[in-house]
Length: 77
Image (cartoon, rainbow, N blue to C red; front, side, top):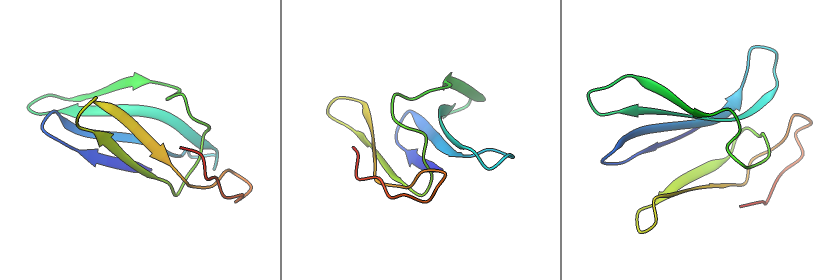
């Protein structure tokens, strides 16, 4: 799972579900609000153990690295 915090709130993305399958979903906790699921598929391959950041100049979420369900490393951005 990746976690990014900024002035808008906290963004969680990806991780692993209860069946052990990797995810690429995105959730946002806005300041003073509750959790909102932004998308079930964030546009990148499902993976775990990755890094993430928000490009403050564009607001884009950038996901990089990680591994798939078979522990194969990913160098995708």
